[in-house]
Image (cartoon, rainbow, N blue to C red; front, side):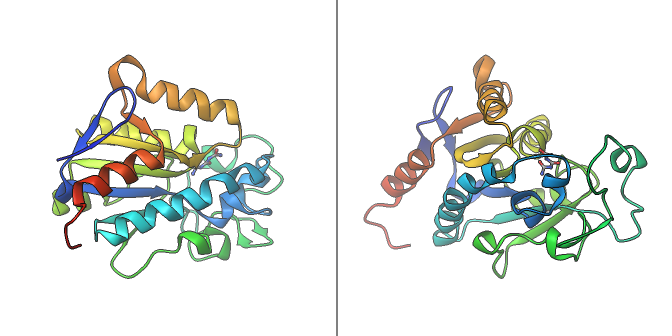
Length: 228
Ligand code: TIU
């Protein structure tokens, strides 16, 4: 058992039963000209999450623990995009429209790809999802069951939208969920702060949060002196 100094209390997990889920670290959310910017957001906020997420990926890869990447995107014919999602508001470009990184939020287009710093490596799972939550209309639940996962560590963007939605879905399915505080970002810093508080309030009503260093320390002390 590994015990992480987390909030609201220790996050304990078995090494063979943990997976990392990196939510939507895609060019469409992180780089100018993508979906995030078409909605009117300042995408520069996302930069802060990149290095911590890369370090978190390194930690899981060093131990050969499962890593899952998600991508919010839609089929080219938009058959999996509800009109209510595409038609809402007044974005500068809508889902499926051509933009500087190809069609906005469409599978296979450059904008839907994961940023270079977080590129999946062989053996890692990629889940394409049409919704904000990664369990909706995907095979994620079956994949986690097959792997015997009980605890999930989360990173990615944005904190209060796809990360929190997926944590809530996972929590309802019985997973213990830990969000790494520096490895997630919002376009609105005060929403990130509020989302972290919401997650761990009421005795961990949705899950736990911890700094990356707390997870690194816990893993290191567990395996100290052992051969990887
Ligand atoms: N707009 C926003 O904050 N987020 C999303 O639309 N998707 C994700 O969070 N990935």
